Image 1 (cartoon, rainbow, N blue to C red):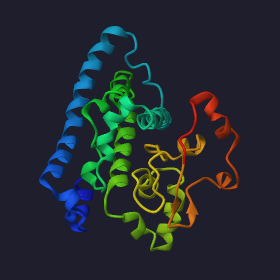
Image 2: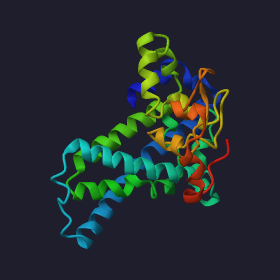
Image 3: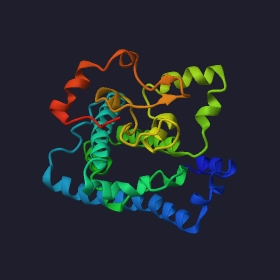
Length: 254
């Protein structure tokens, strides 16, 4: 985080009056520090409850190899996050908790954790982490949430490092692959209403793009040319997207 903060400072992202006021910087710093305290409290509280409610569950996942466990936790956590995030844009009660994240008209690394403090309670990491630690999958859990934390910071950095990387052939090839899987600046800026293809009712994915593609909420274009979609999405919407409303409710309008 420190290196990305230095990058934002060095490239003048905090020269923007909307981002450099004492109120904004103070609020963003508080909302960066508070989540750590809340998560620590939740881990301790839930850990105490888990030990008493499930005394025989200790080390139940100790036999599962690290990387299979990593992908299971990542997929489960990210899919729940997708629906929590999407529902937070569609239900007034949750929107009040998530709204502080969308109040700024700028992006920088300090506002990545900018949420109402109560929004952190339903986030799956808050209750998955103590369960995984108790079940002896703590290493895989730490890798998942560490990876997701880095991706979140990269998404919200004000400096467009991805555009700089795209100046080079190798960088373009790398991002063309990575951005089909991982949510980075191009994809997430659309959700924040920044840029030509802004649409806050889309691109709800936290770390993985696949959920937006699967449920028909992916939107936007990279560099004004390449659609942010998988190859088959460019031809027509997949059958499961047309049917998703039967199971999950209507997709967000584009």
